[in-house]
Image (tube, rainbow, N blue to C red):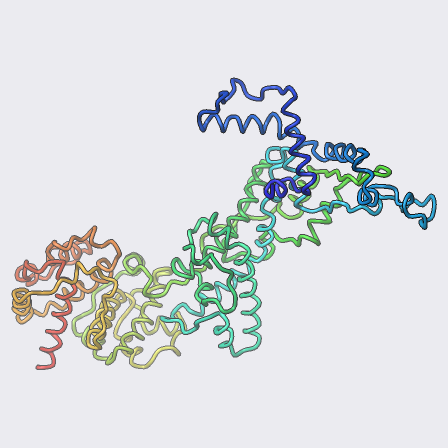
Length: 583
C-alpha cells in the first residue's frame, strides 16, 4: 500500500478508493487490447503471467488512471452523501456548511463555506509527474516525462563547471607530488595559508560534497563507471579521505571521476532526448576543459520551474466543491525545452581532469610516442658514467628522474627539437629552472632531447640500484614467479660471464624490460617464467631495432630463465658494484 500511495500521489483514502474502482471495473466488459491473447487461463508460464499483466495494465488500469481525479471526486461525493457518514461531526466540519453548526458566523457570507477553508492539493512536480504518467506522457511528451523523472538529479548538472574547476586545480597542484600528506579534507583546508584560496577551496569542495551525497546511490546502481560499494555507502563530509577529491582511475579518486562522468551523462541524456523530439541534431560539442556555466543546464526549481508550471495551469472551481487543476502539458514541455534545454551543447568525455602520478603512467606508450615525435639516439658510455657520477644519492636520482619524467610528459604531447639541450628545454620551454638543483642542471646539460629515452632508462635503473643499496625492494609489483632464487650453478655462470664482459647496455635493457613489462599484473600470461632470459630479452631488443651485443648472444648463460629475472638482475648489480669498489 505504501508504494501504491507514492506511485499514485494520493492519500490513503483515495488510494483505497482507487483499488476499489479498479476491482469494480473487472466486472465490466473490456475490449481485448492484443490479439491473440498472450496468456492462458492457468497463467502457467512466466511469459503468460507477463502477458496477463500487460493486458491488465493496458485494458483496465491505464484507462482508469487517465480520469482518476474526476472519478475520485464522484466517489468522494457519493461517500459524503451517505447519511451514515455525513452525520459525523468531523465530516460536517470538513465538508459541511459551517453556518449550520456555527451560529456566530455572518449570514450569506461568500467566504464561510467549506470550499474556501478545505485543504487544497499543492501544485508540485510530483503531482505533475503523476498527471503526465496518466496521460501516456512517456510516448506523447517524452522530454517532459524524462525531465520530471530525473529532475532531482538534472538540477545538479549546474554544479559541473565548479566541480571541474576544482578537479583541474587539484590535478595541477598534485601532479608531481609522489605521496600525499593530507589525510582528511579538513586537514587540506587547514593547510591553506591564503584566506582567499581557502575560501575558494571551501566553496568548491562543499559543492562537490553536496552533489556527491545526493547522487551516491544513483552512482552505485546506474553509473557508467563502477565504484566499489564501500565508497557509496556513506555521505562524505569534511572529515572524509581527501583522496576522494582527486580524479583518478582507481581507489578513492574514482569517486571524483565517476561523479563528473555521471553529471555529463545526465546532461547529454536530456539533450539527446530534445534532439530526438525536435528532429534536429545539436550543432556543437564542448570538452570539459572549455565548459562554462552557459553550456550546462541551469535553473532554480522554485524560481524558474514552478512559476512556469503554475502559469500553464488552469483552475476549475465550482461552488461548494474543491478546486481542480488542469495542466497544459504540451505547453509546459515546450517552455521547458525553450528556456532550459534548447541550444545547450553535448559535453564530450575527452579531456577530463585526471591525476596520473608518475608511478601510474604507462611509460611503454609514452616512450614509444616520444620516439615517433623526437628522433632518439643512445647515450655514449662516457656520458652514461658522467651523468651517474653527478647524482650521488638516492634522493638526487629521484629528483632528476622526477624532472625528466615531467619533460617526457610534455614531449609526448608536443614533441621538440632533437638537438636542443635538455637543461635548456626545462629552463626555457617549461620554465622549471628555479625548481632544479645545480647538479641536476649539470647532468642534464650533457644530454639533448634526442637522449631523453636513454636518460630515462639510465635514471630508472640508478633508482632501483640505490633502493637495493638502502635495503629496499624496487620490484614490489612484480610477480613472485619471476623472483625464483638463483642456485649455485646460476651464480657461477653469471659471475663467469660478467667477470669477462661489462654488458652495460644489456643490463639497462634488462631493467627496462623488467619495469615496463614484467611489472604488469598479467605479465606471466605473456612472458612465461620458464622461457630463457637471453632469448626473451633478445627478441625485445630486436623489436626495438637494436643489435644484441655479440658477447651476450654468444656467451650469456642459457640456463638463466625468466623465473630468475629479478634475482639475476639484483645479483649482477651487486656483483658489478662490489667489483667497482675493489678497483
